[in-house]
Length: 378
Image (tube, rainbow, N blue to C red):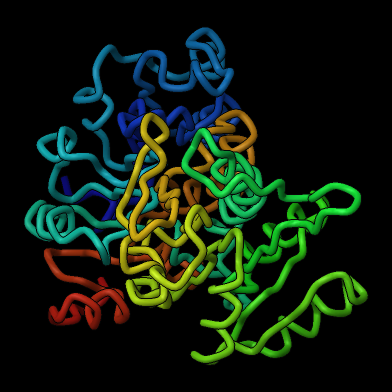
């Protein structure tokens, strides 16, 4: 299939939306409203049965919006444009087709097997996490960053409970007993939202970032209720050693997250302290971090409880689906209406989103991270 990379006027594009198969992943790439918009624009939409059921969207709603319901993922992948949420899982590898556009979160830097498959498959990959807007922000990543950030103190408070291997510290403390010390590493969207919830829960919060302007904005917002620390190794290590809960909220678009917590530093943390590594999609900030699932979210390494679930927002799939799809639909319409080449011209923010095309990596950060050549844009 080459139609979307070389579109012809008046083409009817087939859009496919499979059911997610990652562990406890209940989000869906299109809502019935999104289907309606694509159908009104003249396209055909195939939705796998029950794709949106756990997010509160039943098959009847999709059918009423104009979707064709298909009984298998393979049929949903028989499309020019595949819209989903999470990166391909191994069982989906055989379903992709050369020339189609895969529009979803990709997180390729820590996943060489997936990257190699996509390079060999001839698929063009638009990654939600690196699409930008006119100000250089990440509008398709931001909704899930906000949700993951808001979830992080909640799951951290749960992980601190003794039954989960934690130190038994209550995040907000009680009269006469100090609140837990929470360290948020990164003051971007995840970090700002984690800070909001942690402060609301009554924790003693310290935010660390290299960007002094971001720290200044948070300092002004919270009027002395949080501490801010410029990110340099000694100050960062001191804060981590004293923390009850560390939230990893660092992002370098397209690249691996920096490993800011060494095993030596882990051993210096108090036993039963917790790391919620929201950066796990890009490899994580702890030397011990490895992806976990909603089924088995925690592990203890060097005496520290790690929560490294790589699809945190799936825990609140209804909210997350609505927040995600309202952000991703405009670009989905652009891709369907114009095809890849014209869409990249019409919406320059899609250019950094294109990570793989024509068997080559087209995102400079990803190419550098993997040590592979950088290919040309279509």
